Image (cartoon, rainbow over all chains, first blue to last red; front, side, top):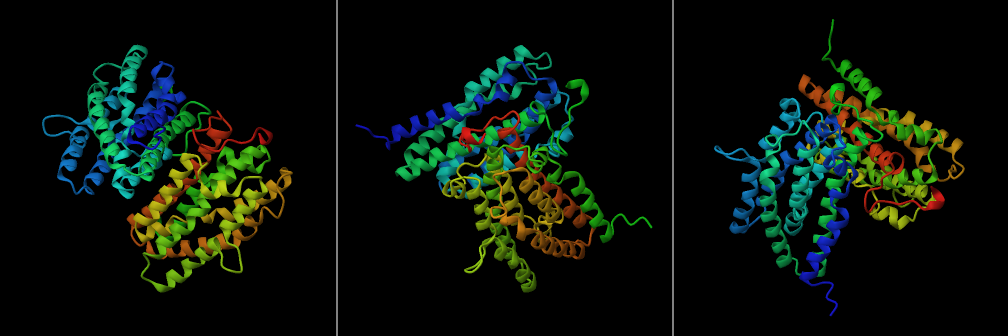
Length: 246
Length: 246
């Protein structure tokens, strides 16, 4: 039976899309992992990616703010705790700043986000607005890129530690914690969308959402590659590396 | 007297910013005007820029929807008429489709916007959201890039007609109408912000808004340059030119 619209099929459609469009396939990502980036390029990546990290709790909070189911709100609140931390435990944003500190970037400049590539700001804001404005199903589906992140984070950890003398385990602390969190979150969201996307149109909306989210991540790497690798044209106002890091 | 915060000074700050950050300085723009683009690159530009044209009335309508002053609403309504046209007169969006038709692009594919570069979509949506979410002063100031557009449009008309054998006066009809409209609109908006930005913070917000809007336009050209010129890496799902136009 050719059940191309069953829920089992939804998962295989999502995994197939990710295998073609997740940003681990982007040339900048491959440079980063394989040790072919300069320190300046790693700095530019970490500084821009900071904005993504910093905005994740805003999108999660706006999602919780639309959930009428207390159990779903409690489940999703774990993500706020992971990113924002609490009195005893730094969250993901704080750990990301340890990375940018370790790379020699000024913390105030990073946290101000004033040196971002405009494309980074626009792509991340598109994600935040998507979660805020689309259906709850699409808002939840937009995190499904996490299905593919545990592997990439593990590769990134080992690749960056092996290849860059300016990268130490301490400044990579962000990545230690993420794989189990991402796996838990992705599995929850996958089961939720499989259960709640009951019509062909809803399943298509889930697939389209994953494509949108892959575009967000891909666009961020396009902009980094354009500004800091080839042709290397930095837009006005964005981060300019020091010559000593180039 | 060194009145760096007077209204006269606001205009000179805006003009100075535009002289450094308006997208006429972008290398893709210079290629386009100087006849160094392939037909495929002109197609990619027109197809992506279509989305900007198509979304302008949405941002204008959301601005009108926030105006309590009927005179301001009437003034701003001219922009809706210019872009959307009426029964007797095609608007700017329709005339832009004449350009994409003339370039050999499928009208349905252009109008669907499914072949956009993701960065185009995100940048234009950032503009729409900015107008919807910021103060009325910032919403109005966000059109001030039009202060610089009459000259660029005139240069574009003559440059493109001179350099490309696939460009004819008929398919460039969009650009005939725009310079006087843009000049009228920019002058209105400039006078409005000079009158209403009465504190240093408000004048700074106007300047920051123009910088944001320059970033939107610049980001769109960065993405075109990256995908279709150097390094020429087209993101998954975006417009792929025919070999015969490359």
